[in-house]
Image (cartoon, rainbow, N blue to C red):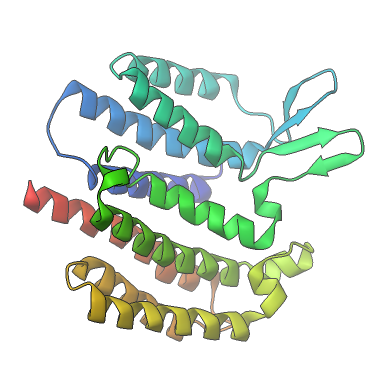
Length: 266
């Protein structure tokens, strides 16, 4: 297991956990603890799957992996999931499993004869939309009133746009690697500078919209301002760690501040 990649995945798992905790009434119950463990472990497991890359085919092995996972590690995840699901109701278990299956569509490979589909991440714009949706959904998955509450729906849309811009920033980071591997993304299609300009215009538009129309979403306004500054700083020759700090760092800070805001309200 690559230590650097594992630490990055752990940090992203904590980020998902913070987004989840920011969306619920915080209380120390068996149900909340089980959901928290499920979200954290599930996110880490999904990122591990993205390293192993599962492949579905009609060959002798219906499910295979490009990089074979450790049996003990798989058994550990299974035990944790079964242990936590025991304390969850049917709705909660169904939502978590559905979110997990939707997540695996990002990297799941399908082979049917000569047809080879390399997951949604092989489709440039769909890839970014899908990834942004995943991060947005985990923060609203257990809000029962979301369908009838226009304020929550509005917050969902704003968060999606912020996370979409962050995901585009990750595409900017990987543009050289993607060009060498002939992977098509919005960044490789438009080029670094055109996409950067588009991101700056989009973020500035979002900032103006939040100032004029939504004084309540102060956290989102703060994150959008930080994101605008981060995008402005980025250069085509910036080191990958600079992109990670400015983009992933903004994502992690966003989730932490959302959690702290909920903790203060509670």
